[in-house]
Structure formats: C-alpha cells, structure tokens
Length: 110
Image (cartoon, rainbow, N blue to C red; front, side, top):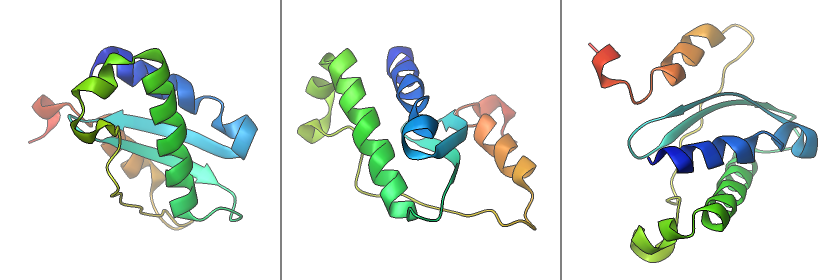
C-alpha cells in the first residue's frame, strides 16, 4: 500500500475509541490487506465492527487521496470479505500482536 494511504487509515482509526468504544490495539499492513487487533463491547458484532472500519477508513482515504479511487478496480477500496478471530481470556494476546506487527515484512518470515 502507498505510505500516504497507510497513514490515512491509521489516522482514521485513532478516533474509534472515543466515538464507538472500539479500541484499536494493533494494526499491521501487508501487500493487499490489513490486520487489526481491536477490543470492543459486546453491543457490537464482529461484522458491525468490520463495516465501521471499512466504511470510515475508505471514506477518509478517498477524501484525502482521491486519485486512489481511479486506480482501483470498480472504485471500491475494500473487498467484501474478511476474517475475524477472537482471543479469549485464556489465549495469548502477545502472539497475535507479534504476528500483526510482522505483516508485510517478508524478510522476517522463515
């Protein structure tokens, strides 16, 4: 991803905690996707959180970097698909954080 686009996505996520009570704990960018580790209240489903993330970040990217829309197939920033995994109180959050931090760093993958 372009550095400006990455930065725009990061900036758009900073206000999620105050506005939606969704805490973005970690983000990792790879070539064509993003990994998020977030914490949210059970009043939201995982799908609702994904829709918020996608709609708000795409809107901000298109506002700040309008040329991005012209180079995308169909003019959409995000695909319809996503994957959600959960971490229980018995899981190891640190393993997930390290995995997300290493996204896009092929030299670190063995």
